[in-house]
Length: 173
Image 1 (tube, rainbow, N blue to C red):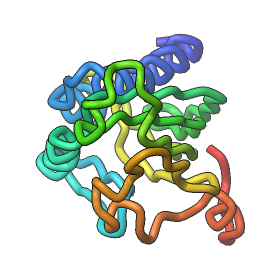
Image 2: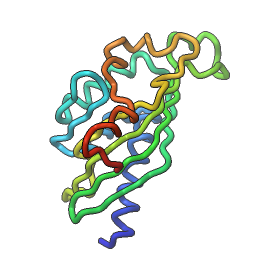
Image 3: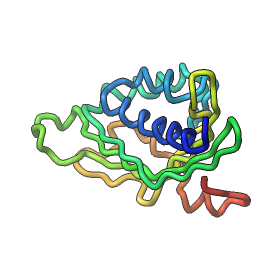
Image 4: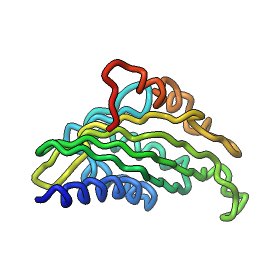
């Protein structure tokens, strides 16, 4: 596989994550996006392994009616069968709780930040081995009922991009 092919494959992997979540295929996230031993740092306690990642995304489904995850500004550094990437994300969420307002209602909340990923090439292709979510202040722009419906622990102890970049040795990607 050429360097260009690797860049394309990792970019496609990042897009799959968003598409699978937004089309209610969270089961595909753990099987086609993350490695078997993946680590996901989205909240106070990390999620380690496919079972924990599946549980995290499955538990969000009862609250979220629809979502739109948008990524851009992708940077990728390749190193043989491993790679690092970072990209900006915006995640728009509409909650079941506000569905009575109709399909043309405003978004309930938006989160935005940076996904900082470590990738590994597997026999099935590139997978995310470690993902760290770095919030961009404000961590959430709340409209309507806001992110409180998902629980305070989801939003507590998030590292902001500014905090991360002030750590010794911090790099992007």
